[in-house]
Image (cartoon, rainbow, N blue to C red; front, side, top):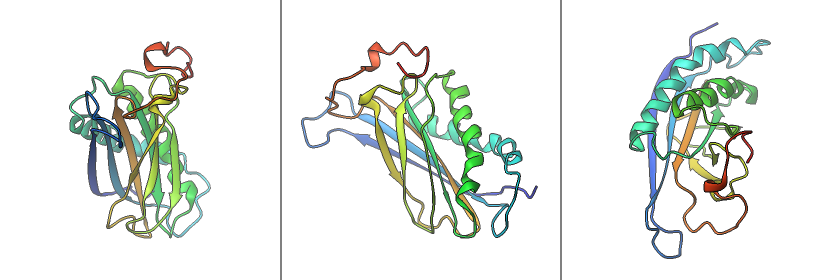
Length: 193
């Protein structure tokens, strides 16, 4: 398989103090890391994409470590998600090899959280944005952590590239008040509740 080559990595961190209401006692941190890589499958059909998952593991670990550092360490990180923007010479499925490395990479580094890592993929061009879904790391039904972070990179993806992204958050949405399962109630046994 052709090599997957990293061209650029970008880290973005939001510090959210309020969302139109009063200031939060503690600002919510939400961050994303985006890696722009070459798409070894661009311009052709590849019947077996699965070997790319193994090749992406080191990138996923590096991206996780950079994002955790930008958020001040792993303590308190309680939300996560992932995504990919595939350039125009690729196909949507070329973003799928990110599933295992991105998701399981975050799980391993964050201490084996139980909830599924939500994901989004799209086709796009340079500067196109993607809404990365965010959910609680141990219980998918914690409503206070349902969120998205819109991210983009001005110079990517080029047609023969893919932008792989990870998102993490520290704390619930500011002004969350929709009831349901609260983070403190989550048992984290089945990934749902």
